[in-house]
Amino acid sequence: MTNKQTVFSTIDEHAETFRSISRSIGSRPELGHEEFFAAELLTKELARFGFEVTRGILDIETSFIAVYDSGKPGPTAGFLCEYDALPEIGHACGHHLICSMSIAAAVGLKSVIDQLGGRIRIYGTPAEETKGAKVPMAAAGLFDDCDFALMAHPYYTFERSGESLALDAIQFEYTGVAAHAAASPYEGVNALDAVLMLFNSINALRQQCRSDARIHGIIDNGGKAPNIIPDYASAKFYVRSASRTYTNELTEKVLRCAEGAALQTGCTLTTNKYEFSYDELLTNETLSAQFNQNLIDAGILPEEIAFGKDHGSLDLGNVSVRCPAIHPYVKVVEERFLLHTEAFRDAAMTEQAYDRMLFSAKMLAATAYDVCADPALLARIREEFERQTKQP
Image: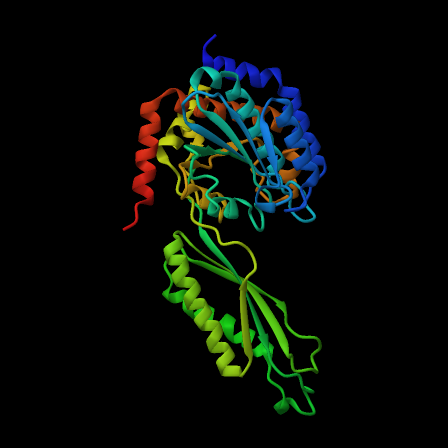
């Protein structure tokens, strides 16, 4: 039996445990930073498999890092777990499969790491859907000594690791003066007018934006009653683009739009970033090609692996600027069910989805094995990463 076959057979040996983890977390969805059941279950199982577990990383209650060190020189392989759910519709993004997949891959790799050398590190990263914990973890340098980081996202097809958009989440709050809208409107300062001017200014700005830019928002407070001049109104926006540099430029322009609306109406403006800022995903193509090759070796036809697309924004982007990383999509359902829908949620809770979760775990583990076993491959991955992140 080869080392890679040992990895696969170890995952098969514990398959029911990994299925049970997915079922349990999928049946008990928890919102971001409230994943107490999931974090407890995952860390308990990792400790049982011989990993040294540290909980509450950076005082984030539901985060963790689990490590197994071979005691021999070698690379650090990182696997990422997500386990938060969506409001009302539960695990409609398949995070119950993501965390089980990463743990299964780590356990599989652990079966041979003592021979290969190096260490395995599993990151429990809460709240990917909102204030993703990968952001402060990356900022604190927790990925800087990780040689490569892997995760895969459930989907209705196979898709190469591609791109994501850098993102800033900004809230705009305008304060004016209330007045009777019929008897004395001239005594008021209309905060809702400021919000409407903000929207109009941003709509005009879009014509001068690059094609990869996305600016979209909502009015989350527009006043209390039609006969009262609103003394408070607020809006929330996402500002996105394909690069952090351009997103920063766009955010500054949007802020100027907001300041102009305040000046025109006489309102006071307050702004804040209500969610963490995400960087763009830098897919390490060398690492991605190795994952795709493992899919092909396992019987997936090359034409079944779609080219990577932009699926919005990911907190993994902040990891990918700190260490080589990939985020492929893996087929777990047959029908073309879209993420964040009840149809996908239900299909991702079937035995077929669990089977494909285990298959995908093997592909992650095989890719990590290949990198750990081949110093030349690791060197190429590192060289590409250094080119990607080199400052101009």
